[in-house]
Length: 345
Ligand code: F6P
Image 1 (spheres, rainbow, N blue to C red):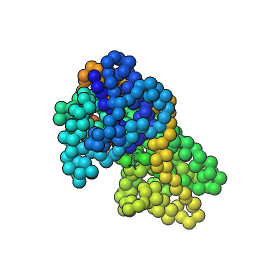
Image 2: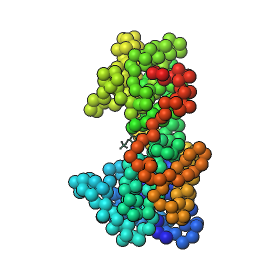
Image 3: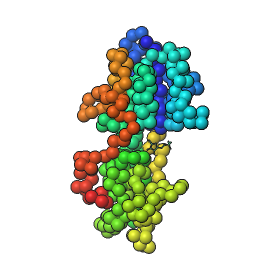
Image 4: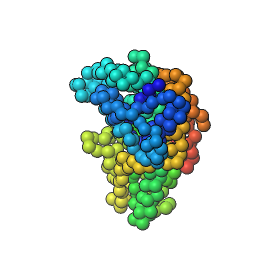
């Protein structure tokens, strides 16, 4: 059997561990050849396919990024390189030319949506969920998320010491395009005094009151805000070139008065870089092995997922096109509420 693997969308720690685990599990199982498709679906459009050598992948468990490269705009059904035209036939040709019988697509919502469209065209596809945002449907935890949360927790710890020295309000903006998982878990792990989530909207007055209270009690305050938060509730919306954290600062500063000192940090892609945590290495390995099982059992049109503590398979059709937000009654949300760190309970 000849299996092709690609990594699509934004990268994250743990992708190499998946490539490694899938390739080792397939080649250990018997007569299977694995090829890497470079830069996500762009590799199928531009014919960038190369054999993967299992022996050379063995040392990759702790390496961040993806040795295959990635691309987050190469949709074969609306290819930017052809003015947005449907070039899926070109991608199918490429699979056929290389004799690739099963395609394993590792990626987030965009990648799974494309994978599902190929599955509908009859391509045997298996999906592996990847996103630091942790927002893929029917999957309770994506690898990369734990690594991102560790970066946020570390950053809050560092901001806390300097905030205390200067008696400041520090605002930290995390990634999380639609969902607040990173800000919520990172904020809890880093001891944030206020966590602002897209799921709850923005209440400037409540946030200012919370910052004032914590500043009175402990002399400083740490705010952790997810990039997906809309400031529209406060009559504000992020303008071009402005980040959510900057707009939040502009809203918060006059509310706290001229005496208050505020500073802002944008963590950005630091959350996606570097080595995966041990948890993410193990989860990525489990996903790679589970994907290999699905390939060997010819269970196509499925994505591997973690539910409870079990690796399961869910239909790609059920995953495509939606985001998994933090449920308002989620235990972590309740915990944050009990700790008094949600500015709008
Ligand atoms: O979806 C993952 C993610 O890291 C988001 O949190 C963030 O909004 C986005 O990707 C950033 O994408 P890019 O790398 O294209 O700037």
